[in-house]
Amino acid sequence: MLALKRRRMSRICPGFLTVCLLLAAFCSAPALAESQQEILFFPSIDTFDSFDESDSAEIDNFQRASLDLLYTYSGDRVRFLGEYLWSSNEAELERLKAGWQARDNTMLWLGRYHATAKHWTTEYHHGQFLQTSITRPSLEEWEDESGPTPSHVTGLSLEYDHERDDESAVSFAFSAGLTARFEGDELVAFDLLDPHSGHGPGLNFKVAYRPDFLSPLQFGFLSAWHEISVVSGSSPSLTDLDEITQWTVGGFVDWRWNDLRLISSVVYFDNVLDYVDEDVSDSFWLSYVQFEYEFGDDFTFFGRTDNGFEEDNSPYLRLLPAFIAHRHMLGLRWDVANFHSLTVEAADTSQQGEGLDYDNFKEIRLQWSAVFP
Amino acid sequence: MRSACTILALVVFGCLLPQLADAERMVVLITGESCPVHELSTLDIRKAYLSVAVSVDGHVIRPFRLAGDELLSQIFYQSIVSMSQKSYERRALSMAVKYGTPRPAVFDDVESAVDAVRRLQCGVLYLWKEDADSLDSVRIIKLLWQGD
Image 1 (cartoon, each protein chain N blue to C red):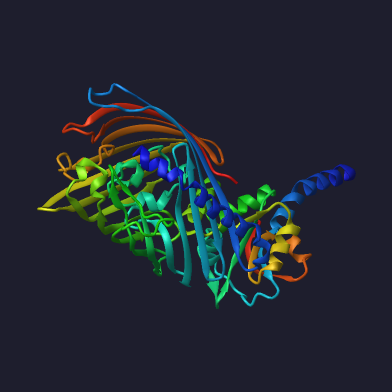
Image 2 (cartoon, each protein chain N blue to C red; image 1 turned 180 degrees about the vertical axis):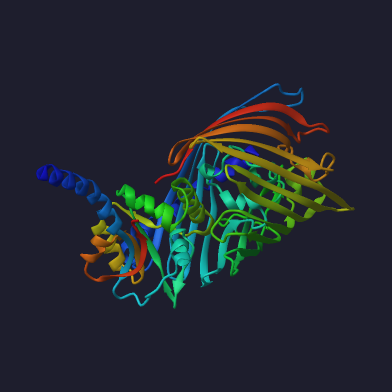
């Protein structure tokens, strides 16, 4: 994993050039009369400490600083979005896509984007300040954090909102493109700067119902299919494994009752691990349920459980030793000012680990996050 | 006795004057003179300020905001977008991150904001009617709020 991180760091220079191009476009803004654009900075600083670890667990404590830079441009019919993330241990071009607005409620995008069939990911992306908790649900973790499904796809995506007469809406999103491949002990997303990397295709679909078109309340279904190429020689655990075909289907809900919020997703996984001499089938469920309660004007108490069903002996999840199999977490967020927050989170966590048993530990995290301007 | 009554009447009138003035105050939506859009629904205005794409007869509506006037800002949150300041700011941020739609540009003074409206074909801006009445090259397309 360290080698992969180092390789990502070596791509800082081309990525930096991309960011410079974005900034140059931003600086030439006044010439573009019928357009609007914006640059957003999402900085955050995290500390992580673990304790009460099981014998097999080797958990490293860390401090991490991150900066997510987002550039958006909106012309009459054309949109552009670029997102670049720097942190203490990686630098990566996360999203780079250009969109054409066919109608007010229909967008066609081309580029690298976040997988459509993930609710949390498509709500918050890398904007740490926007999500209440410090951690993401393990179901929606990024590829380089041992996420179980591809988070980045490069290709085409279509978004369509069907507005109804009562101001409710049904939103459809469909995407097709190059998905992640399996290398070492994690998935690796398709890299725009390395187009000949042998990634397979992926399809994503999400449909959501919103009772008020302009409100974030919604529930719906999502499904994805990925043909995940495997770099067999990159890890002993991948020997003789050619490809993984992964199909997922699930539901999500994001609802509020006054100060109380529920955000949850349940996803069924059906994996086929295509070894040289046999196919291994593997199916299980992963889910998360997060409750948030706002009190006072500036405080949010929250808790989440990440859990699964029939996932304990999954051959696929065994390939992801850093995957968080279970996490039971409580936390408190304080919105210090309009765009700054301090968050503390404590959890009882089980990580997949290298052996047959989970690595168990308790963790405590602190975070400052903000958005500028 | 008569002078006492006169003083009392003046005091009462003096107390009522600000309220009468408030009752006459109106917030309106303006656009550039060259914009062919003559009518915009309340829902479309709300959508535009929440960074949802709105076009009327092929003309894209570009919203601008004015900061610095506390009462005007309160009217914006309560009557135009119908949500608290915190909810609005988060929602607009979320739309930028999700759909790549920039948040409406915010100006501290009327002159700069109106300049921005004039530069775009269908830029829209909410402001006090007394400010709008004194402006050239813009026209009022909707009454958004009236003091009661």
